[in-house]
Image (cartoon, rainbow, N blue to C red; front, side):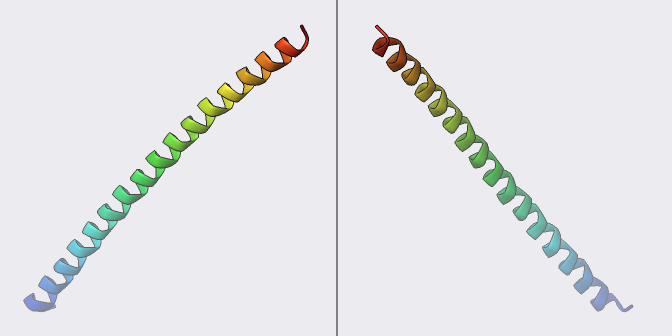
Length: 61
């Protein structure tokens, strides 16, 4: 393999590594957003449960 071809292979490998790093970063950002959304949904579900308990307790009075 001549030096020019070797340099091209190295450049291609660097681009692939950079793209992989970018994809990993984007994936981690998506996972973080999903986790935040899940936490928010769980908080809202807890609020709804407490509202239902309050309503059922006040209607039984």
